[in-house]
Image (cartoon, rainbow, N blue to C red):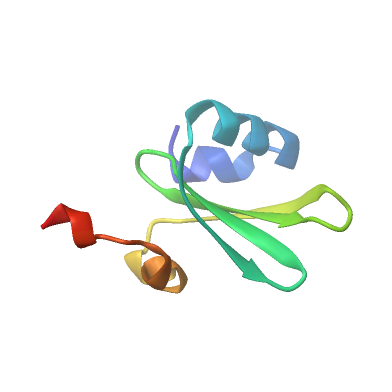
Length: 81
């Protein structure tokens, strides 16, 4: 599956694909969301989850490494030396 095929799917199918194929990378908070980052092989996906309503509101997929910037302070690479 590529980024464009992923984006054409309805939300429920995108979420199922993430659970099936996605690799969890990080989670961050940006009110009112918990935003969870997954790697899908050739692209990344953010899942926007609203804890107060227990709902996944949307996803955002991208290939640009610039979009990973909000997660850089959440990743500990100290053990990779």
